Length: 208
Ligand SMILES: [Zn+2]
Image (cartoon, rainbow, N blue to C red; front, side, top):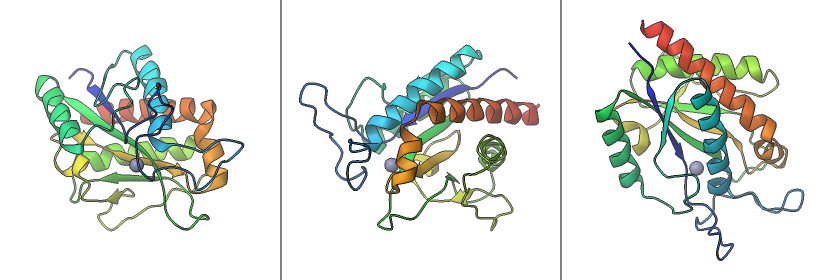
């Protein structure tokens, strides 16, 4: 079978360029780090751009639930409607892209989620973790082996209501000052994009 269509889903709304206002409540660093507040929705759009370039250069078709140039906080229902339309046209892989936030400023590490139960998404998530750990040996991956696979499971709407294989990434914690610096770096954007490409290639080889 041929390559999948890759649907990148940058979480939340971004920054309105005409007012400079971030349109998403919460979803930001606690305070400025190196002079700037980190806005999850803004930075996730930058990840979507970088990853799309890497995947397209490798021959993949990439589409978005919200264009990275569009700051609108598109509803989950609208995102899911787009995902299922894209997937009905061509077999797709969905990647919601987020950074994590909690009250505890020391919480850190990477998480990847799939829907509850065992599906092909668990296999893609396993390949993603392998590639992520190979790329970032010093970053802790928070795992859950309760279903036999290392990824975590969650009833996130983007996972349970979308019809295609999906891995929901919480890249690092934007409530952790050290991780905000990594999240903002272009190097991390590019290396995670390379890891995603390798995971998708492994997954497609596994399907064949
Ligand atoms: Zn988020």
